[in-house]
Image (cartoon, rainbow, N blue to C red; front, top):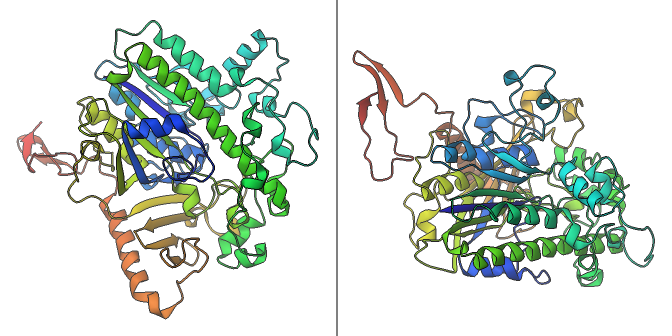
Length: 522
């Protein structure tokens, strides 16, 4: 079996044609969903990119892998999906980036791996490692005759400024042609890689930067969607009203940082953007998604023409979403649904049904178990997720989760070296989210909690944590959160027992499937 593991960056879960988006057209991903399985309620476990991808690659919650921020290294004792796949002969090939900070204890202090959090996930072969610096892509552009800067980020400046004063800043097209974009380059490289590997099993991880900001698209995608057709963001009338919901939200809204929405912009200016700018930015965001959809269509067609498609496990998802102006913010440093709800489509070559739609809560930590079970590998004890194969084969797994869980660190929007916000200690910066079909509870280590009734308040504007009518429900969700944390404490050695006969291994039910709990000497 071949594996094509695709991630986009900052792609919201409601942004697919199959999800019912009123404007966005994603015909190739919709076709993949019709030929596979679409998971409607799929959620990431962390923000920002590095922590979220670590959850995705290790099958672990943030509270165990502890890679809290972009730049927090991943402990080398943890395995990951690439290392496991190598055990049965795969050489996972990376096209794009993984944003994993490597354990500095493995390297000399002078090693470049200690100076960049955009490391390559251990076990991945970096065939085309296109991170923020983007050197392989820049070399390609230089061959095509472009004037290239030192960094790929600088290549994301528009071709010209103020050519359409009646449009927003993100309308101006990129300075490169669509066939030369970073996304097109990655697909070209993947196709070239496959051209000499059609008779062996392969594992490709295709990791797109788009639609991550700065929001810019090459022609014709910059004008594919019209600003006037875009709805304004969902938010309160004023930022002051929005900020009154919670102390941390107030801090963040007035101290927005991170990647600017467009080249040369200041993230702190987001609350000042005009309605036109907000609408155009959303239109550009959709254009970037359509570009990826077209590039994936090209790759899927190549697989079909080479008779590879029917023997390939295809997974499409994202690391996290984007607020896109909602609640007066961009980016993902928040507790709102738009930050954590992401798409998931899985096309399994041996699926017993096609076009299934799953409404159960699924999580990014389920991806690694799904890949490993598909290639007949055992699931490591560190993995807290479950294989999605039962859903894919039209079955309902027993004792499946009834909520999704997510975490983030309140320092994630701040610059490196900044003190924790609001006078908190470093260990008080954790935030935990548990969300069921109707209710959502957000627990802060050093700040007041939040509680929402999503049936009555889907936009999360009314905090019910102090409403006496909801105290019982809030207590119930507090207990659920505590139970979840206790059940998912780090398990590395908890299955072992030192006995007179030697080390005894006790199989646990999490990944034992039909095997009953048993003990054996190892």
